[in-house]
Length: 606
Image (cartoon, rainbow, N blue to C red; front, top):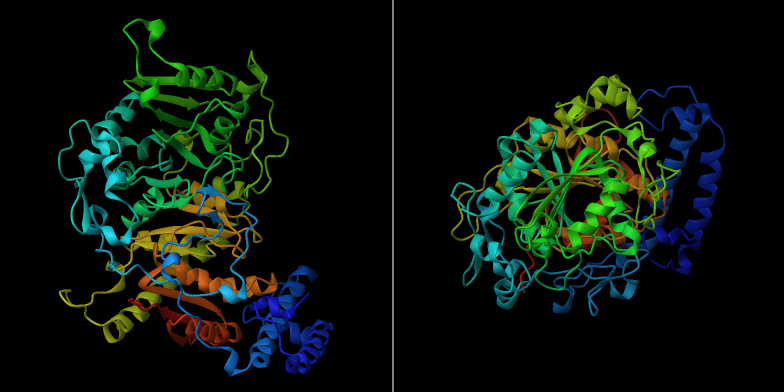
């Protein structure tokens, strides 16, 4: 194992002495010593297992490795990364730009000689603040051509206005006849609701929007306090994901033509496909089985497609091939057709797990392993989640962000541990704002034509918690009334807490931070990570590549808040300088070795 893999650099021969010292330090650390092990953490260590002590020793060993590597590199090696050329303005790793098809997910970061800082396009502008930025975006910030706009659907052209340097969307305050409001009301009627405003009361809090177009349906769901997550294929231009994120709406690159989505079984209350371009009856119905896998009991699948348009008035000719085929398949997986209006069909997944044993056409078997981590695994030809403890119909779920005692027990979480975590992040968030606000006032220059700087919760819309645990930073933001949504990321090699995050109605995803994140450049306003760097150093991921990736997905003038141990934070500050961030280390003043690293990305203009 090369120590250099932590930073992604080849060691010099002169650094061999430090490697020898590192081995000696490791031997010293790993020798059992109760006094030393008790001082590796400022919190009281419960003496219930030897494993917990070993985990802290391993963590400290990783930090010591980083310290030694830092000194062996020398100051001359730690220079700024070069700036990328124009061809990388919209660079997304792991995707084949030439053929516009997904590449193998087992991708790697750029080679050492190819590492560079991605710059914004020449005509890039800082996005307008929410909620104005939801309805008006700069054309220079997204890669879309006039021809792509003109070839978009009829509803899209009604909802969008392409001007010289901006795209304007109709405000939700206006009346949109035969548009997104009427469409959402139509879905509500098929469910049996009086209005789309009743979605949350009916248990619909999260919606997976497949092929979300330009985000109009998602923007409307946000106004209803429903959390949409858009997924769409990588596109070299006219990207649905890029445009949705630019509007301040949750989105990420993803498809499931061959691999599972990075979500556990029973994750979403509704899956929505409006002209999403998927042929659902191919590959032995495995695409529809993947929808069934992520759909919660009692949840809904909405399919809107011009190919399902009624042909004539006879009941026998009411549906064409796609909707008919989906309806045939739905009976085999215990779905029922709940309604149809015009080109829109709505199926509901059974809330009764006994339905599967009573099927007359049981040709699709039940999966045996429902607890596997679904991180881009191969699609499975079976029905998932039927034996899960999380099999709870959406109509029966708690309305308090999924935090009832019975639901915590299902997730294996102790109530006192959960409540303590809530209090920790409630307090931490207040500290973050108090730290960031004076930094903005002192360091953030007033741009021409802009008003005076304001506190950061007016400037931040898209946030990412890179090591989210239970999602309680997300909860703290909601409780304090911030106009922010959070992509709660659960690293794949940590405890899989994504089910509880999704069950609470938050956005989230599994991800391996040794790989690039599936999004476009400049899509997040703030990145937050608590003790992620220590975890990744123990996994031997390249922190250098991680910082370049964070810089790629962070918007100019965006913020980074890292919380970790002192040694790791000091080295993180050095890496922040290499990507040209302005960085400050802040002592938490609680007597621990925890420190905060607060960074701001500059606007590197061409």
